Length: 241
Image (cartoon, rainbow, N blue to C red; front, side):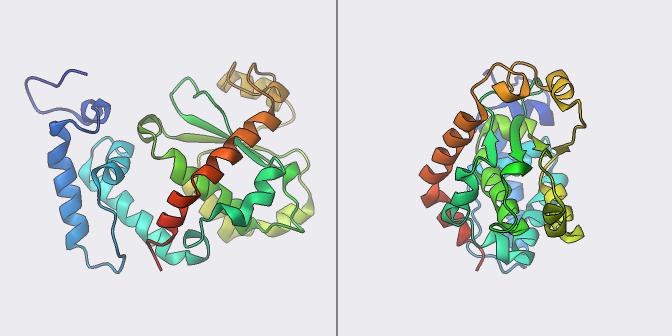
């Protein structure tokens, strides 16, 4: 992609540039400076270019907003060690193998990554709401490494078929608040297949009226990817101890 030749680049223009572009360095340097000067107890701070670009792109290179997002990220991790300090996939492997969660291969028309969670495949007698939320966190940490996801975000579909009181008992207000803070959630009623097709037509799995693979294949594919990422997930689990 060609660099801008005249005038200061806009946030959207910066967001579209590749990671190695020299035009990104002033913003990276300023965000890194703020992080290093902040009196925080997080060590070590992973202030690499690729890490900081997640926050800059998510806020179209608005430094103040990106800085706020970065602080909130570390603040959340520090305040929820029961979740953030254990992103090892082995702890939720049973939930993944049950077919609870999958990530669609293709993006939606806006470029967002699309996640599907199927409540019927979550046994609340075996897995807690925190286990379920940990699945979301693990997926979020992995897909946010993708530049396209940094630019266009994530959407989540919660298939509530099979919802029972035992599930509702697990979702306390505090847990619901944490989930909402991480994901954009799309809820659909009885006509959910028709509704979903309006948002994500041909990228949906077969069970939802789309033309993609079956949910079983999609879930298995994503489970395999998570398990292959175990070393990375273990490394970020140790950032805050």
